[in-house]
Image 1 (cartoon, one colour):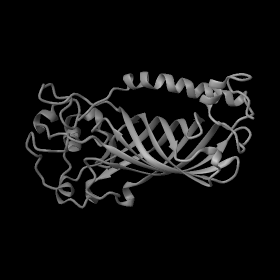
Image 2 (cartoon, one colour):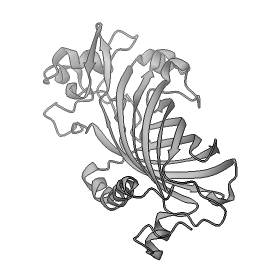
Image 3 (cartoon, one colour):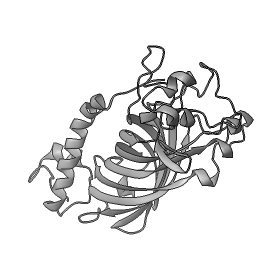
Image 4 (cartoon, rainbow, N blue to C red):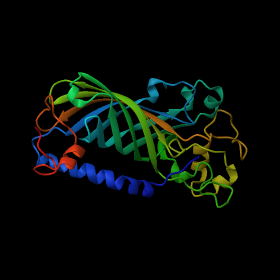
Length: 304
């Protein structure tokens, strides 16, 4: 399992976020350009990890709808940079698995998901080509916050404070408590369908690779049940650690999850974008970077 710390990621975010925020602030002062846009949308999101199976697409019960908002600056005639927020829910349930062992294990989880991201969109054709459909590659990274919960005896319980894999047992043999934040890397494809000079429809498919294996609270092996019962989580930690169909708690060290692969979630998006300022015309030279370079009549330059 690879762990990345949000403090380091924030240092990476600092410069591009500053550039984007300054650019978006200019919307209120610069009305002669459409290098800036606002996008709102949503779509399906689903998880892939220790509580999923071999199917590429999970059962519909394990899919949910996310919502998102992005501010975008066009850097060149093919490259955009976006600062965005996404909210949603991720779920997993062994009872719905096509794997017999996982159905016997019978674990489940649900977590809210908050994601702040910085993305680059590299379109195949120039904006001023005025194609009705433009395809793109999407890459970026982000910060997420999650909090896995499970239904224990009819109550929704936070799993991280329980230390279901022995995190709060006072013994060096067990892992330390995991963080409820992580960095993510994203890469995917998209399409922009131009509706008119102000509006466009965006279609995106962008999987996220996280740097944690604990979105689902499952990663390593079962702890010693007697030691777990004496931890701060007590008997509730024991119940949350093993909910299997077999009556006895597994022996210490028996595999509970797979620590070799970090968790993944997949985002599909349908979004509506609004462009600020006047539309481009044939011969326009779009892009914030070009305007900064030219610096005519202010950093935004002369549109014509």
